Image 1 (cartoon, rainbow, N blue to C red):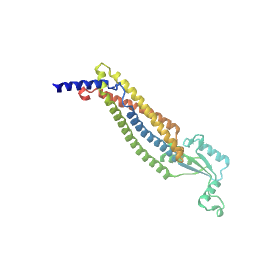
Image 2 (cartoon, helix red, strand yellow; image 1 turned 90 degrees about the vertical axis):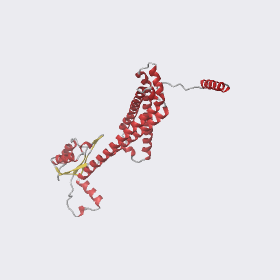
Image 3 (cartoon, one colour; image 1 turned 135 degrees about the vertical axis):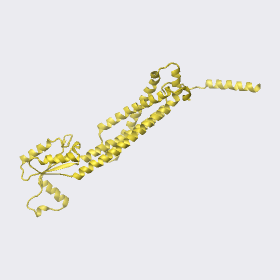
Image 4 (cartoon, rainbow, N blue to C red; image 1 turned 60 degrees about the horizontal axis):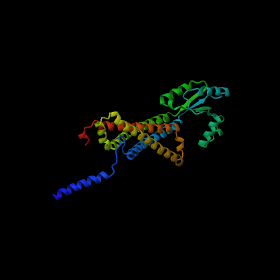
Length: 313
């Protein structure tokens, strides 16, 4: 009997002590802020970092392609008016590289060609040749969209038909090599992007699903008191949208700091920058962060809404 009274006394005291202990009230839509924000920021940073690499690769590819040139050799003894007419003809062609206010067309006289040859070889052929065998020429930089082997070949044939043109020359092997290597790099990077995107989506989805696990009984309670599915989803989706956009903004800030440091630490890195594409990338990270978070949250909330009470346990 004394033992029973002791147990009752202990139970009453325990309940009283627990009643006085402050309990944290759960609010619908609230879940672990730190872990979700950190994981989403890290995931978006990885995606953004690879996006920066892609932008640098595109800039580097464009710089390499700017070296694809066609040299147009002219007939001998053309006067200045005839050379000017050929220049005007060539400058109107759509395949000429145009960059800002610069036209990818330059004239090399036979004297300039001779001086360059002597400088590169160290042999002065003018000492034993009466006439300069080299010709005046125009060097054309070809726009990137006209750089397939077939297009270059067609351009060459087209230029050979211009009046006053003696011969058209270009490095066939260089064009083929550039196109093949860039295609291989594009395929590899495309496959890596696909794997990376799938991994990031799974990571964000699992992080949010685990964060919402503690809310499953609160969701069930709201259902029992008659709350509609839309009413239950709304605070979760709103909060996840804010978290996702914040994560995208934080990832963008980290990337911006990293790029700024790289500009000062790595020589020539600034030449590969494309400010417009970088701003677009940062905007995409913010929007995608919000969208992925909302979709993952919607999937997790719907899962708990469709569970029975036994399944929730």
